[in-house]
Length: 171
Image (cartoon, rainbow, N blue to C red; front, side):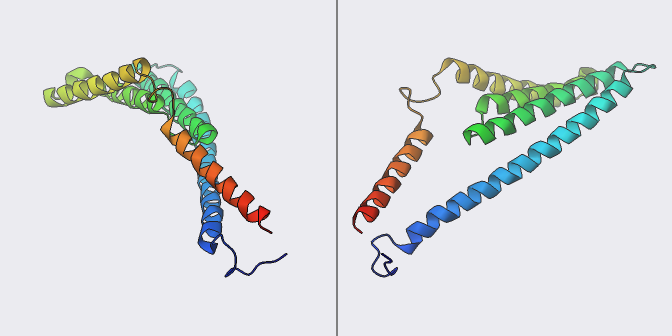
């Protein structure tokens, strides 16, 4: 039957902590869903603007900038979708977005209009991002095939279920 909180072996903090974490995760998912909807709406507006920029007189820099910006938005949308599906940020997609964003800035401004220090900084940035992307592909994503985050999550869920089973069995 009903046990008062004082006699319950599971403290109120543990019960409320799980409920609070689930509530915060739900709120976080709602925020990411609203970001997805907003980003998708913005992408539709950008596609419309891109088609208008294809009308004569054709400006190559504007068309290229619009296409690259749309690709960045698509990659950001994909990053948000991966987050919703797997509850993690994909490092590969984040690096790809960074690479395309840096290249877009160089292409839009033009290499001849950028100072040499900015070109060197951009090259160093792209080199580091390329190394990260290369290492992400060639190295296994986890140590010996075990994803540490998922392993900790499984262990936490297993312990939580064992506590619930123990508490329900003691009634």
